[in-house]
Image (cartoon, rainbow, N blue to C red; front, side, top):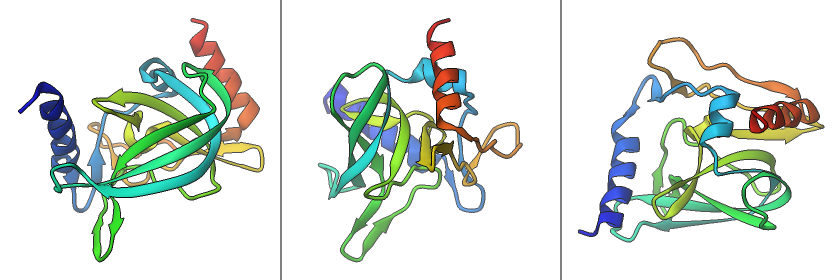
Length: 172
């Protein structure tokens, strides 16, 4: 098995093994500064497409989401980006991973993106995805649990304030 395939398989196995039935997925708690540091790209954009498919070994369902970029805050200058999540539905088979972000076509979002093997993924599962509605950003981390046992802190604030906070961390 090549090193690349091993790393991809390990990443997916880690996500699956850390999923618990009643408490969601346990992950490291990330604040905004952590998200900014870990992300190789931060974009504001709109979900324009999705494609669900089986992994090359037919063990996992993956979904690629295409984001039309309105603003590049960090990293990529591309007009579109693609992020991959574990999960989706193909025919009668559905894979749901607690804590994995989901997207809807037409949804406006701020994404913190990292490279994970051959894929671009959202930093910290759902922690790195913020939905934009009526000029405000919000994220929902209800199905994530953290090692300290405390619930996740959902964020809701004006988009401009959120982007200003990101830029403060970028300039440190």
